[in-house]
Length: 442
Image 1: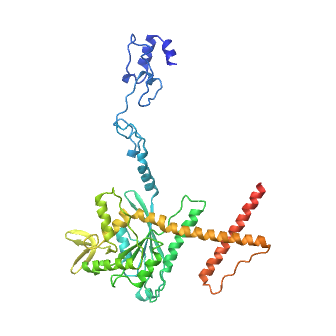
Image 2 (image 1 turned 60 degrees about the horizontal axis):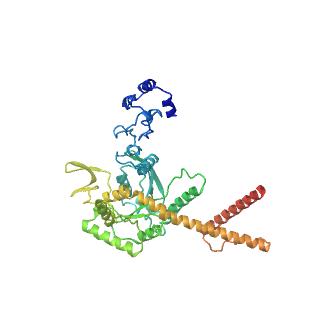
Image 3 (image 1 turned 135 degrees about the horizontal axis):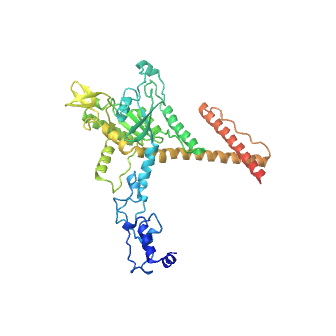
């Protein structure tokens, strides 16, 4: 087409066309005597132009980095690469895309606090997240606490920091360990954790899986009393009952009632008893070999601090000309955020700044997957059992009666058995309905 255009056009018309063509200032315009067909070979420009005709008369130079269009997200711009990097594809911006999407969606985190009353659980939570979650709490007397049973209460709050939104849910266990007889007082806590797993499993198995709300407990701060010699039997029973369900982080409460040597002795004693009784507390992930040395040292310091000896306070006091959060005593001031006084900063670093996502990952990949596998195995066994029962019924030509619940079974087990039987009946009816529909269509 270009050859035919040049053959049919004289030199004067060609010069006039090039002169009037927009953008001809940056083009090289050959002299008429030197213009020939061989000089007008097709040259592929390095950067696309706005017009197809212009590229045959002007070999455009690449845009300089300063002249390239900039993206409001910086590195997401496909042109945002160095001049020498000619093989830049752009998939290196995937972390930025994930970050932008995650920040827009927000994050969920559910924290459970457990331990007997008076160990500073509420104060510590308020100190960790700089909020007041227990504004409407009613304090019970000692007599009321003795008669109180274990309850599960939830406090939810939306926190935003530098554009990042966190939906924080605090699960409290008032009444735990306060009664005279604390036998199996951990059962309501274990049942609550299992209920959240069950609800998530139902939502995940349903049709609408886009907006599933995650209420699974990601971490449990278990408060250990400083007034004793290591772990009490109740502490051992609680952690052994829950260590397969949730990430347990042991906390040595009210560290300001102990001297530094006493804190170290109690920490060592608690670690020995945790290992002796086979309790699996939250394990910090191993650092990669290419991690920064400062991060490795920080991670090692966090591992050696378990159980965290903490102090909680929502009061601001004056200390050496500056205002700090702490407790004022006749002999001095205990600063909450002073690493020399307690492990509050280390706990906050672990819980929020370095290992919050790992706590969620362990909950999803380990604890929830164990629960999910057990549910699937139970459902499979029930389906196989029902299938064998139907097979025997067809072969014998008589109804195969459902075995009665054995006598002496406790009410809870009896209720679960009846629920499973009812679920099997519904599944069987649905299966027969699907089979009839398939026969009608064929």
